[in-house]
Image (cartoon, rainbow, N blue to C red; front, side):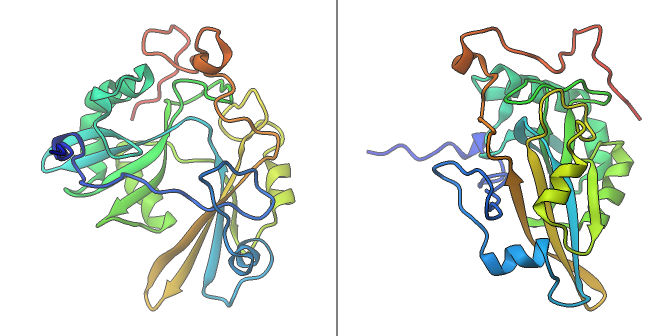
Length: 253
């Protein structure tokens, strides 16, 4: 008899976040896929019409995590939607502790059933950071399982004082080369190694509202995933941030 999965360990009953397709020319892994050439051109060369809008953000290199409001409780999740507090991974358990510590900030942003998704930068995966802000950077706010537009996201997260990825460009299309050139000096978050890449958000005006059409990303060709993780290097972990570190610079509202 097959034991059914324990949904109590997956409060949303689903993944917290899916995969983002790559732009042509981006470095991909075995499970990755590319955006169609036609849609890639909309993001990087020519909009379909005046209703399209492109936002380009720095792509951060950490662990994709989420914080969900379930009733009046805020729970910390991994990308796969499972409770971070139960993870065998130290950095994920650290994320769960951080969410508990900052629960009121999350409640100031989230309505029941919503969740924030972002990058947890405490542990260096393939990029080291000298952080001038807290180790969580928000890049999506999910409402009924759908992304909210960038303007709504940035407005909403101000109530909790959360950090968002560095804005590279907003408006028309932007090519890969100029985007990466703008990130060549360490980006917006204190990268000590070359910035991993960038994320394009294509949004569209529909009547009086805005719809998120898609997200796509570019990862530089020489990027090696997890190149700094101890299981790959045999060396001690490199922490960008630890709660007990005297150099940790936490920005609180």
